[in-house]
Amino acid sequence: MELRHLNVRHWDRIVGAYAADDDQELDDAWVDQVIDLGSQRGQYEYVTNIGFAA
Image (cartoon, rainbow, N blue to C red; front, side, top):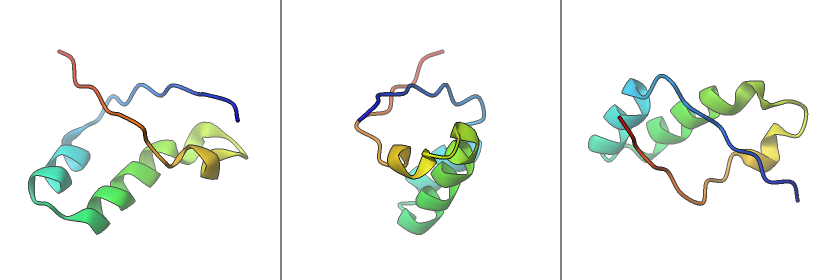
């Protein structure tokens, strides 16, 4: 499996869903971010880690 990195620039929806402990909204928000990764995007919807940096 190919490893890809994604820099997410708009975190508000993801962070809000995480803070609200809303798993469905978190899943939906994440899928909205990875939709443009290409034809194999389904392989990249599973995240091994997330890092926040300022």
